[in-house]
Length: 222
Length: 222
Image (cartoon, chains in turn purple, cyan):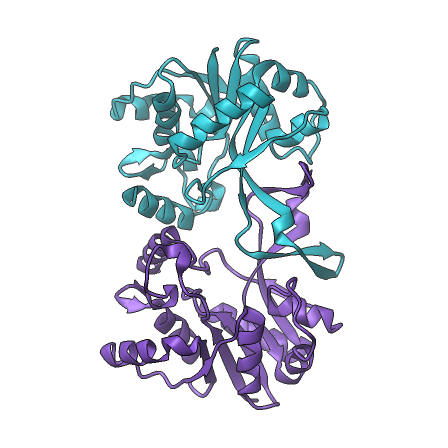
């Protein structure tokens, strides 16, 4: 069974207060994205890894790869105007058979066991969506008011989100809608039953400068 | 106007894999709880600070205070069987006038501006509940299935949760229910309108050993 990973790295890092795209910032001396790509390569050396990057970042990535002697095989595909379009470009670039993990480029701390479990569950059930319980109480906004809701009835969704390739290609044929913030919501709209699997709180998405500090600390604390 | 802080520190740290109650574990060389208490003291040196601790932790806390020359004035009140009962014990120990911030003992990174804003908003509107936007997509569980929901319609609730003292004392006269996981939900059940104010992602609740690593890193990165 052919395994694919689509690593989505479309962000431009505006929230970081940095000119460097956030996925190129370093933790443990190496750009975030290299940690992410390596995690999937470690799980399966034969996996086909597709990195979806804005075209404007291609040359910077190539320079970084040279500078860091980064030799994990992968190919680059140009990103789209939204995450949806970026993932679609990634899917268009791969074959029609097998299993594909779609993963945020800025989640470099993903553990091997979670990658493995996501492929195993996707192979038997069609998909596997990594999620964790909410740590904080939550309130639902209703106009000017809000009301408390049971946080245990919700899960925070992470990546990887792993699918039978044919299923997720089929799902991505729909028109883009703003509500489609992740791949599970696309698959759900296509009528596919979503299977949640356990993630971990280490698997953070690096979006702010504080997240960078946190990721560095967690990396040291492996 | 008299200001109070009730610092709730009832936890026993089982999720930490440590025998030391989590609020006594150190970051920056000092027990977590001392950072938390100091944050409120810094905002208002005249504030009356009530620390709600299990009776069984009183002597350990006193020893730690001696060891660390911790001299921020505060009083200790015995905790109850749940957070609800602990807060109620704290409220029973304070006067009937003024404003009270109820805060998790294991949120030591609370910023001065947020404490200040919570008292100011509570003074004008009756209460102020610190909250942040959700970072991840969320799904709502429905039996064996789940569906995507708009994360922007929700807020993650932190502390402090700050109230006019008379209002929150009134609200806490109700019978305990398991759904009352925070003070906002108690006030809401009493018919009070909840005012959300902006928190920060630094203001983490330390509940796991990873959180301890994160808190240490954030503290260094002030």
